[in-house]
Image (cartoon, rainbow, N blue to C red; front, side):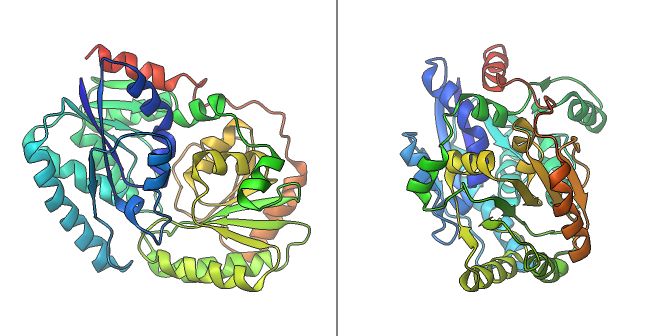
Length: 365
């Protein structure tokens, strides 16, 4: 089976990784990696290097980054990406395209394949994130796909409602749990040697992405978060930088200004899969609005303060504290960290054998 896997960012590649390893080692599959989006951007960490370092061969590299982060730039990038992928699919001989998630680049690549009758398998469908346009994009990719690999039975039911049929829907769990089960995460000492960050110091891991439904509020949001951190003592703050979304650069600028003037604040463009999950393991808790606060953080589990509306609609497990973006609310949520029980077991997203389940389904198509 010849499979084309679409990867457009550090986030989807990190999730894909256990599946890519399974596909690479099985002679039944011919694996083609199509790399685009922020992977090819120096500003966003040139994360294609992570793929190269993992010894995956890359079939195609496609420049699709928007020139800016205004609504016009994102809209134009969607159109440009569709045009570029129409040339890709015109000559493509793959039996199946695998797409993950809900990014606008992923949507563009998939809709370009639609007129060619390409078969698409979608990972992480059925989920809801009301605070971003990704919600509409994700459901659109679901409707364009014939095979669906979902992380829970709740999301499987949502796809059945959306499509009016349960055909092709497979509840396989989350690939991120595979990563966490199988990766030898870095120790505090190894992490410090690699990234020059001492996680023996109590650490808040912070990732705040733009809310793309009401994007004009993003500047105020990040300033309110920073204002809150100014009243927090006893922690260091490790920021990972936001996605290339509408008004994302405003968030980046505020974070970098803060880090440049604050001794206990550090910004990292991309840790890579191993580094990020290791940081999550050793940090005190997470603050922000990243989807990894819902899936990966449940594995340890870690206390998560989920800010704002970007992830509204996702399953909220017992380790997650929902919080409005307001200084008083954020500080109250941080104070509640002391009451968190890290020994609780959360197994919402499977037992770490998702990649093997997906491979089995693909072989039986």
